[in-house]
Image 1 (spheres, one colour):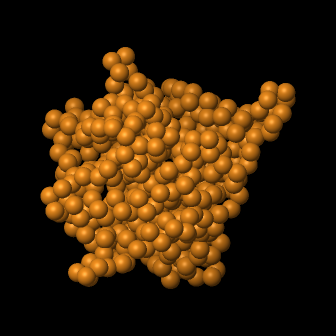
Image 2 (tube, rainbow, N blue to C red):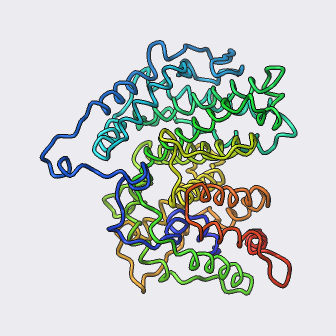
Image 3 (spheres, rainbow, N blue to C red):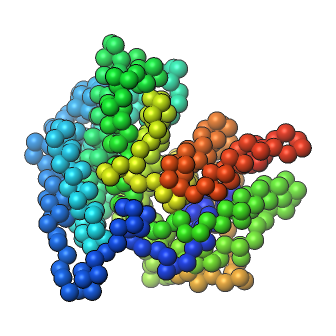
Length: 486
């Protein structure tokens, strides 16, 4: 297995080789709400935290997926609840409807208020872990099916000539929920409702920017018209807030990825790895990154949702992997949604109080989401009895390299490559190569754009050099990295 691919695409290594930070520098909300700290009296236990906001948010969420917020549907029939006519998939009997604008605003306000302090955030997260059963569970499962059908129908309707927008919209799709999945939670309800609102608002906005009122007539010119500015900005803001919620649900919001970025080491490793693999020596020095892995490894394993088993290996409980991958799909899809509509409309991204705050960690979180979603997409099983390859590889990496989960690596620690019967990891690189140079370059360009909104200057410089600087053969480091995936 080519280790330079591991550097870029495997979750623990991708995130951790970017970072060299001291554990004491981490705070649960430093990167999420502009460094708002806790209250010393609350932290010391002298005063009880105000729980009114989190109670209001929990009550709002508990009302999602039931009553007037759902619609009864029949498989094989048509529904237009999401703004475009789609056929109801097999087995779906009910769906969560997109919320009216006033209800969407209330949901966002309740969530924003609850996320104003680490104490209330922690309690909200506990509320979101509560299981969902019965008709609400059925509604969540059915909504994901209809949501994905809506995304597919929208992409098809937009048609040729809008390939960039099609690709971006397709990334909003979520993993289906298996009927046997017993791990559906209030967090799933919230995430699905946010994504449902986003796709419905997007369809409505696209229609409103065309003279015909049809999504198939969407154009860059229409999105960029001055009279449509506020409409498109609302979609950008919706997408960023959705990414913010996905970030909280995944647990990445409480991890300070930025710290002190060892960018020179990272880029040198990428370039050295690419060069040496062509020379027959596919290696990199793990000791360069042991400190970073020890600091952040335990937090990342917790973020993945992996649990240590009685035999010492790591695995997911029921629904755990699906919840993890869904938050990463939603985060990546929502961020790219905001980026694309920002680009198409000619408007710069904004960092508002009710939207995702861009800082030095955001680009890393985006790259991590890209890594795991690409691996998940590549690893979809051919048969129902098979497991997703991405799931198996991540689980195997942590089980075989348990020092990542415990933060106990040393300079002499040996990296054990995942060796899974029937899975050729080299095929992952080939699959990425098959998606094309433009597709992969866009990911790096997205990272650069995200970082330039509110990140670290040297990261943008490093990415720009990686994409544009050439040596004697006229090829960039990106060109060589891409060619080496084949």
